[in-house]
Length: 435
Image (cartoon, rainbow, N blue to C red; front, side, top):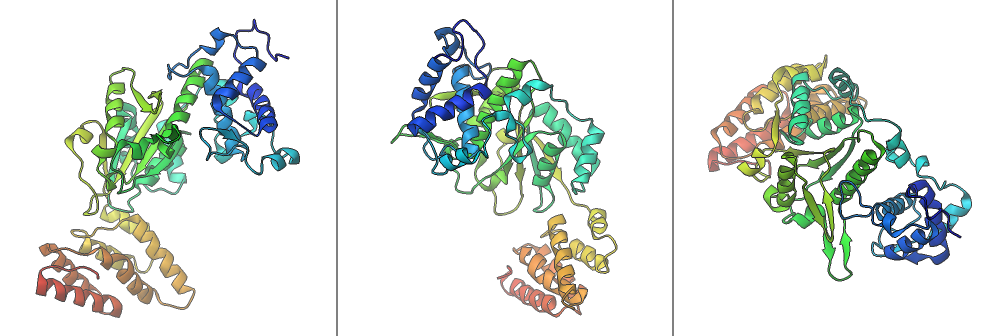
């Protein structure tokens, strides 16, 4: 018997769809998406006019189909639908026991996994309101990230003006942490996507349509893009301001950016001119919503790929520079503070290190101290294990840095022995490395 009057023009909500979806799936075990949509449409007595309604930002996707897919994703999050069968919606092996145990409620409003209430009912309740800038700065500080207010201000304004920001700096300077801490401070939904050196095409980033089974193979990037687009649709339909979504590409220049990011980069440029920009995910076109922000973190060393002017021209670039007084402040009142600061000045021209290295050194010395090892002995270990491995190359500054280290650590046997060996290699062959 139809659940909804055929004359009713309002589409069923996700909360209404979910229990019927599970009832059908429990009865059949597996089903194709078109079959599920057809059965649900019949159960809710939807008209052809209702089924033809399209999403606001995804013009080629019917609203009802989009809602049904959303329900399927939420059920997959609960462990009820197997994600590995993307062409078929199939129950997991544990689905029956989960339902019988009563540990699952058939209501999307009860789902708050990872603290993210990304449900239709939550979206419709109130507008998203961004905190005041001073609140953002305070929140970032409370998360433990010591970042200059000026840097946070530049990052804040860059996101507002461009939606694509590149953050550069030496390894361990807090680039990814800044992106994550800022997103948390403004209550944005965020995801970190690690870029692989093996990426050579757009498909590595956005996924691809498998020609063997005609099923689209999503990536973390494309799934996040879909979720952002769905959220924007539901927010606009509810008449509220949508929540921002921050996509963080970690170490984005480990691979050639122009190879894997070309399509998305072009789409973002079109979108920046207030035009409709889409990304093709197989047969589906996703309109880039205005609540999507992209942040790329980059290291600048010999292991990464260079950027072209095309990339820099389409982004805001922020460089995080670690200064001497920041290193000193990080060491607080530690007895080895002056030694570490002196080492930082020695290696800065050839192998600068930042806060992650400082924190690792402090943690090691603290653990070694509990075993009765002096801070001098523990710091000797750490210079050999954390600082000297960064020094290599044929520049004149390499030899100067090693000489300065040798003169600085006469009472550190491990450091002196290794530094002398590296300096001998540099003087004999014009090149040195740790190994």
